[in-house]
Length: 164
Length: 138
Image (cartoon, rainbow over all chains, first blue to last red; front, top):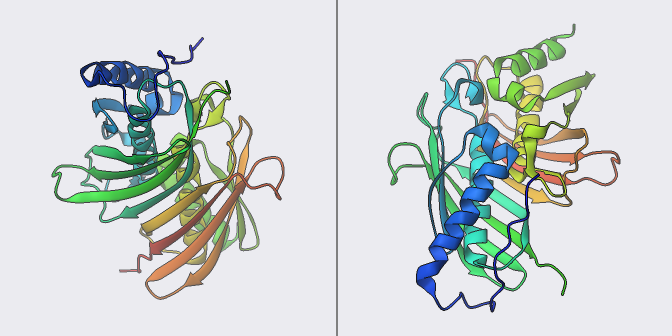
């Protein structure tokens, strides 16, 4: 049975003072997220990197994730899921060592171009502002070249803290 | 089978990701209802449990594309330009339904609104607004 991820609560905000320890705690949380979220596991999400308020996840190309059989390009829905999940990761990475759960309020995605045929997609998200209750996140997705984007996203999340 | 039903069936069968989601659709005249039965691999929050936000977005997006495939048949898949997804309440471990409203279908671009609900149509759990680039016959 999955266990709720929980670390020592600290002051909030700002981030905990011992910054050097934060990435390790966040990394643990991110790996836990990747392993226990069924949707992430079934799409084959792989954690690329995680840092304070930032996260990056990759989804390798797979035949059953194709959206356009003529071109063999990965489905827009997979990119939607990837961006949502990566935004959630950045949001968690920004909240640091607080126990909490998040819910997506809204998610806006712009699709600049289709991904290359038979190619996976990488997303990177940054939670650039976190208040007591809301996180604002931007994300980008690309396939081969970081400067030639497939999609961008802008999202707002609610942060639910346990009642004390 | 009507022409519209055939177009829809073609769309649903052709797109591998639709099968991955386990999504189906029913037609009444030109009006389509998309159906997403609950499945464990769609879960994003195991504690509630609740559908993954990305799954909800993808379901709404595929509903818009499926409705467009009925209204604007094309040998090629229409392309998403942008979408905004609003999450109103958690998607619970139940069957989800969605209907698309084609607000405007121009020569090249369509504006579509989609609403999804579970046991109560008057209590939608998510909505989508989006623009889609229509693929021509060529």
